[in-house]
Structures are given as structure tokens and as C-alpha cells.
Length: 104
Image 1 (cartoon, rainbow, N blue to C red):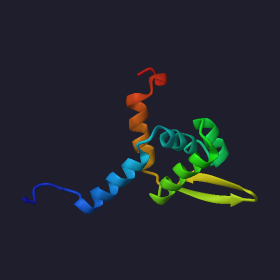
Image 2 (image 1 turned 180 degrees about the horizontal axis):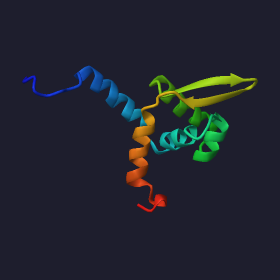
Image 3 (image 1 turned 60 degrees about the vertical axis):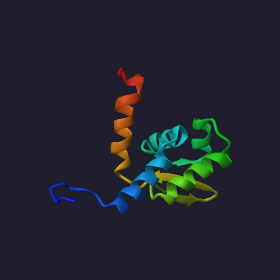
Image 4 (image 1 turned 120 degrees about the horizontal axis):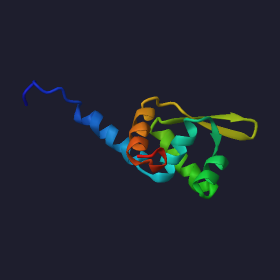
């Protein structure tokens, strides 16, 4: 292949594709939106997504495994937060394109 192209390795693109597959779910995107506005418990995220807590926990676990989120225990509650700053750009693109509430 010609070296005139600046290309990311296929291994890195494979990792990116896997993480995008994890992100490509409406409930997970909603959770990411909420978590960019502050730390939340699984029960708050489940309620906002109209999901059972166990299902919300599974979504959070998948996003944590991809390195998008971290969690911190405070007493009996576990709070989640976004630790992957690049998600902000991805979410902004999605909101700019699809959020009709923003008048677009």
C-alpha cells in the first residue's frame, strides 16, 4: 500500500469498532448524556432509561469494560462517571445531527 495515506492500524480500528458497537444503543447513549451532566447511580440511570436496574447495570458494565466509565462506591451506593473524554465529541456529533429538541 502506498505511504501517501495516513491510516490507523486495522487492530486499532477493530478496537474502535467494538467500542462503537457497545455505544450504539439508545439506552447507553442516554446514560452517557446523563453522566456528562454529573455522576449518577445505577438506579437513577435505570429510571431515566425506563429500564429494570439489572438491565441498566449490564449496560454500564459493558461501557465500563470498553473504558468509557468508572465507578466509585460511596457507602451503599455506586456512582458512575465518564472517564473517556473523547466520548464528548461523539455525543456532540450525535446530538447535532439527531436532537430535534435543539431545533435541528
